[in-house]
Every structure is written in C-alpha cells, then in structure tokens.
View (cartoon, rainbow, N blue to C red):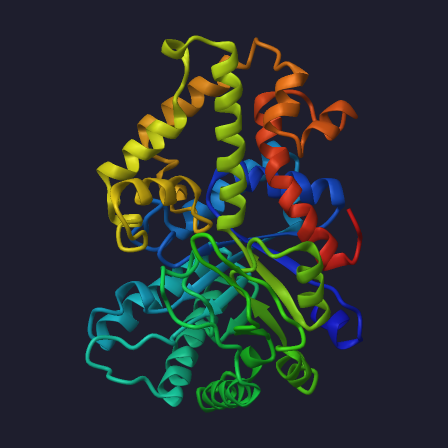
Amino acid sequence: MVAAQKAGIARGVASVCSAHPFVLEAVLRHGLVNNTPALIEATCNQVNQFGGYSGITPVDFVGFVGQIAERVNFPHSKLILGGDHLGPLVWSNEPAVVAMAKAKQLVREYALAGFAKIHLDCSMPCAGDGDLSIELMAQRTAELAREVENACSGAGLPLPRYVVGTEVPPAGGTKAGQHQLVITDPAQAARTIEQIQLAFSQAGLESAWKRVIALVVQPGVEFGDVTIHDYDRNAASELARFIETIPGLVYEAHSTDYQAQQALRALVEDHFAILKVGPGLTFALREAVFALGYIEKELFPPEECSHVPQALEEAAMLNPIHWQKYYRGNPQEQTFMLKFSLSDRLRYYWRDANVQKSLSHLLRHFKDTPIPLTLVSQFMPDIYPAVRAGVVPNRAQDLLLARIENILDDYQAACFGTEK
C-alpha cells in the first residue's frame, strides 16, 4: 500500500477498530468476498494487560478474532492485527515513571501476541509532566519501540510495522461544544517526523524506523453526536502535498466514520491511506438490530418481543461511565443521544448479559419464522434490493451483517477505486 502510494497509485486500507463479533464477522466476510486483507485493530483502553473495558487481553483478542476467521474460512495470511494508541494514555493520571512502565508492559504484550501493526502514542502528558515537549514525546515513543523490538526479537517473532503521531479527534467522536477542528500544520508534521526519527536513531533503532509506515494527522475529518465534518481536500492540500516529499510514509486518518464514499476516496488519493473506522460500524449494527426489533413487533405480541433497545438503555443507565460525561442535556435528550448519537456509546453495552439475552431472543424469533419481504422493504430498504436479488439471504443475522457490509463497501471503493 505504501509502495503503491509512492508510485502514484491511490491505494489504501480500512482499519477497523471494533471488538464486536458481528462487526468482525462482517469485516472478514467482506474481505473474503473481495479478496482483500482485513486490518482489525484493538485500542489501548479496549484491550490491555488488565483486560480493558472489553475484559480481554491482547492474546485473548488474537484468539477471539482467530476463531471468527476460522469459522468464516478467512485465510490467516490475509488477517492483519493492529494496536491503536498504545502508550500511557490509560494511565496518564499517574506519574510518568509508573504510566510508562505500564505502557511498556502493554506494548510488550501486544508484540508477543502477534500484532503486526503498532501505533505508538506518547502524546499525552502524565501526572506531573506539565506541558509535554515534542522531544519528550519522541523519546518516550522510542522507548516503547525498543520494548516492542526486544520482545519480538527475543521470541523469534516477525518485527512489526509502526505508526506514529497523534493529531486525532477524541476516540469515538467529539463531545458537545468541544474544540474547533484544526487541520494539522505541515510544519508541525515535519517536526514530529524529525523528532521521532531522531529519537529512534539515538536509541539505536534505525532499522525500526525503516518500518514506520504512517504518521497520524488531522486531515479535517471528525464527527460529534449529530454533526459530521466532511473532508475538504482543498483545505488539506498543503498537508497532502507535504507527505509526498517524505520517503516511505503515508498518513493515517482517524475518525473517518460517516464520511461519504467520495470523501473517503479523496482521502486515499491525498495520501491519507489508512482509514480508521469503528463507531460507524457499530452504529450500523445498532440500526439493523433496531430495524429487526420493529419487524418483530409487527409479527409477535408485545409480551413475546425481545425489547433489545430497552435492554441496552437499562444497561447504560445502570453503568453510565461510558456515556455520562459525553451526553449533555436533560434525561430525555440524554436518552436520545444514547440511542442515536453518531458516537454510538451504546457499543460499550453489547456485552451486558441482559443485552446478550435479549439479542439472542430476537435472533431466535426469526430462526424458524420467515421475514416477510414487505417488512424487509419497510424497515431495511437499503438491504432489500440485495435480498430480492438473492445476494443476501433473508435471515436475521445475514441482514445484520449486510448492513455493516454496506458501510465496508464504501471503504472498499475508496481504497481500491471501485464504484459500488
């Protein structure tokens, strides 16, 4: 992909950040149909040595994804696993010496688990740091790279590719009223590359620097609860031109969720070749589950329905840590955001036992009950043509996966220049 970009060929890759089994299955099925690799990433707060919010460690995540890949017959050789924002972020409220020790353990476990793409992110100040200089950020980045290199070399594992830098929107979108969107200054990008390369050299990591493939920047894409900042290639033109002067590097763009297909293609053409997506896929899954719930209500009496939306809402209210500081307003407004915000913070609650029970109930309802085509047309109009054409089986789980795969089609077109 990097070689193609440097040869003037606009190629990219979608980087899927999710641990939801339906999303992962959709990604792998989509890659199988299109004969393309699947890049799946875990974030530091989602998957770490202490379990993260998903409750799984790096080696657990590898096994989890591997099981799904085996079930759908996706070739292991085309599966690429990545670690996102690996650094002291999760422990940044602790002193730097403590946070960095935990960050080193974090990257070591990702490396030993076999992750092939590592995003090193030491951009956040730790307790007592004050303002974090770019030199210290670069030094810490090199320290983590050394940890990865030593772990892989000691275990006889292939050495990974690296991504560095961090000028990105907050994970999962912006809070209401948050910062104004600012495109990365090319001069700042140049300084970041210069300082991290220098730190790698001073640490004796010249060979590791040759495997740095991308710099994370802000190209002007972002989303909030109900707003989407569309890519403006004219505004990002200087940034796009700058990376053409840097051998071996492309850009990685985060929070590309909800961008139109044409915007995604423009990003790839402008060398933002790695397109991160996550909440947009679980948002699509949530839409499809809710649609199945509406179909269920047309076919079954209320007392027999699964009520998945209510189960999700109840789980979120019982454990508001994942949304409370993000969604402002009165209770009615917060409930609306819980269900329909583009940041899709409901995604944190799919693992709840009662939610799982309700979802299983919903899918069981349709195991032996055919879904009338008229209801598919009514509640899932984007999928209906594919069902009619026989491309998508008229089964509940296939309909859910198809909704996610529709989003992935946009990334396929963006990365390979094909139209839907």
